[in-house]
Structure formats: structure tokens, C-alpha cells
Length: 361
Ligand code: NAD
Ligand code: DAU
Image 1 (tube, rainbow, N blue to C red):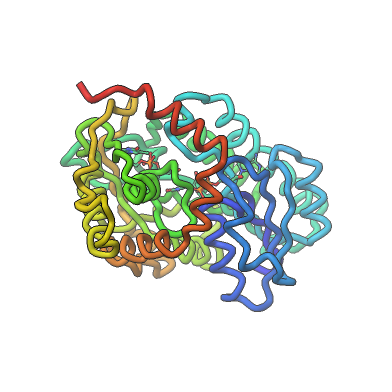
Image 2: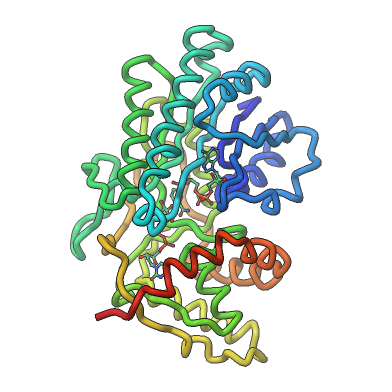
């Protein structure tokens, strides 16, 4: 990895990845291609903005000519592809945008890489890699006693978001199989940590709790996710790119599976401890059950045996240590919260998703 194109680097995981990768490898140069949709913000990257080895380009991954020119101009040897529409609830309201960005956008990147790396042979084949960042949601949902998702679990995506990510995974795999493009894919579970956009469970609950708003639990709150602290995900991606085998998929997860309600109760307890003077203590009194997400997956769990054996990765943070770090970060970054949450799009989303939602029957 010398010259890296990160797509979606102004979003949650992409910005954490840039912050993780730049100091870890002194020779690396990073170009961040991001369209700055509602989910992307340069506020997530203020600390790296003036770093000479970092370049920001505002643009759309669907613009193949732009991607071609970046690959050539910067002699890109590694693409780390985060850019996506990432929120399941928004995919239920507006699936078309998910197909455009997640499927057409991924195809555009693959086509450009094929042209420059395989046809123009701009760099030795052994030096290039397309890394696709994907999700465990492609595997669908687990029954209570099912084994965790492994790399051979059949795909069964249940939401438009998951279907669009599954489709993009298949395209990446097909570009390897048909054209010989060097690729790796990681399918990761739910991330949390600094800079996560407050439409997702953990930051939404934190922001609502801090302002005394209801904490909307979908359905019975017994759905299970496999939570991973974001810097652990970033480390896994780097290790898979540098040590993983081309053409392979690796599942990444946090080795813990609490129910949503337990996560929210833990966040409330942390806020009670860290903000004891808040008029909203005890914060768990804000918990409020609302109508369930349509098609809501009940349980995810990830088997990380392959990534552990092949590249030596396992998570460093426990759920307790990661949640504490996360709550402390949001408490210390009220300016970031103010800038992000005052966006018109965000306020409109809250209104659309929660105002007319109704209560759980
Ligand atoms: P995010 O929504 O926070 O950020 C997405 C970024 O992509 C934003 O900066 C946005 O501006 C950019 N983007 C969107 N459309 C674009 C386009 N057409 N061209 C260029 N940039 C565009 O997402 P995230 O949570 O950081 O997720 C990043 C990736 O990781 C996604 O591919 C997602 O599917 C995957 N993933 C996320 C999680 C999670 O828990 N958040 C877990 C597993 C996998
Ligand atoms: O599993 C990986 C996926 O995790 C990623 O691919 C997605 O990009 C990411 O958004 C995330 O998807 P989820 O749907 O699991 O995340 P979300 O934070 O939206 O919801 C987590 C759980 O909490 C889920 O069971 C729905 C529930 N929930 C969510 C919100 C926003 C609530 O109960 N209330 C809420 O208000």
C-alpha cells in the first residue's frame, strides 16, 4: 500500500480508517473521494485536513471518468471502498438511491480499476488491490440457536440495503473470477464509536438522552447485533489488505451479542454516571417502545475464525470499554454534535422516521 484511494472517507468508518492509516504507515498517501452526502462531512476530518499526504476530492463514485483520472494521476495501487448508502431505515423509504450508489457506484469503481490495472497495466499486478467493505447483513437473519455467520453462509439479504450490498459483493467477486482483478471483501457487523452519524442506534440514543428526548426502541428491543468498536474494524481492514489472500472474503465481528435493549440500558447507565447532574437522570426513564422496522432482522452473530487464523486479527475493545470510550467522545465533542445534528436533512429524517411511527402493538 503506497497510494490509496479511499471512497466514502468523510463518513463514519472511512474517516476513522483515514485517521488510523495515515500515522501507521509514513510512506502512505491517501486520496479521499467522497460525494459529501448527508452522511459525509469534512467535520469528521479536521485533524488530517492539512496533512500533506492526504488529498480530499469531492465527487461521486458513479463518475467513472473521475475515478479513472484519480487512479492514473495518483498512481493508485489500493482502493478501499467504503462509499455507500448505509442506513437500513432509509433503504426502506428510498431503495433507488441504494442501488445507484451501492451497486452502480461499485461497478463504476471496478470498471475503472480493470481499465487502469489490467488493461493499461499501470502497475505490477502483485502491487494492486481492490478492497470492498461490506456487511454481515448480506447473510440475512439467524434463529436463536443457529450457528454464527461464516464466510460460507448462503446470502439471504432481507432489506433493500442488504440486497444492494449483496449485489455489490457479487460484482466484486465476479471481477476477480472473470477478469483476475485482485480483490478482498470484508463482511463486518455493527460498528460504533466516534464520528458515527446520529441516525444509527448508539449515537441517536446518546443525542436524544442528552437532550431529554424519548429513546425509540423498535419492537420489543430483543433484536441482537454483534457490536464492534470502529478502530478494531479499521485494523482488520488493513490486515486483510496487507495479509489476506486475493479473491477471499473475511468476516469481521466483535465477539459479543447483546440485545438492543441491553445496549440502550448500558448507555443510560454510563450517562447517569458521567453526567450525574443531568435533569434527565435516570436516563432509562426516557426509553420508549415504537413500531418495529419492517422486515427487521432478529439476530446477527459473526464467526471470526477465518480472519483470526489467516491474518491474526481479533477485536481489542470489549463492549464495555468501547461504549465508555464512545460516550466520552460524544460528551467531549458537543461542537461536532451541534454542526451535524443541525443539518436540515437530519431534522427532516427524524421527523419522517419517528414522528408518525406509532407505538409497538
Ligand atoms: P456512512 O453512511 O457513515 O458514510 C458513507 C460515506 O459515503 C459518506 O461520507 C458519504 O458522503 C459517502 N458517499 C455516499 N454516496 C457516495 C457516492 N455516490 N460517491 C462518493 N461518496 C459517497 O457509512 P459507514 O457507516 O461509514 O459505512 C461505510 C461502509 O461500511 C459502507 O459500505 C457500509 O455498507 C459498510 N459497513 C458499515 C457498518 C456499520 O455498522 N456502520 C458495518 C459493516 C459494514
Ligand atoms: O450489521 C452491519 C450493519 O449495521 C451495517 O451494514 C449498516 O450500515 C449499519 O447501519 C448497521 O445496521 P443496523 O440496522 O443493524 O443498525 P442501526 O443502528 O440502524 O440499528 C441497530 C439496531 O437497533 C437494529 O436492530 C434496529 C434498532 N434500532 C435502531 C434505531 C435507529 C432501534 O431500536 N431504534 C432506532 O431508533
